[in-house]
Length: 48
Image (cartoon, rainbow, N blue to C red):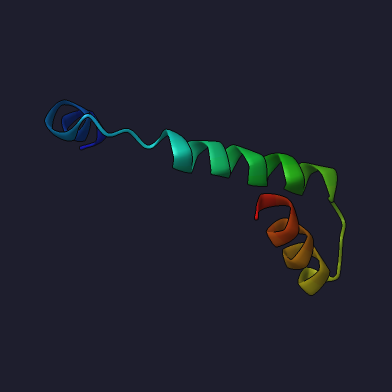
């Protein structure tokens, strides 16, 4: 499906993949954090 979208519309999902990799890297930094609200706050401030 993604390959067909590229040839039909010349669109890719690179922005979504980039955002996903940033979130994964951030999660790796903060392993063991128990305060979920703080984690989400930091995530939104970094990616905003």
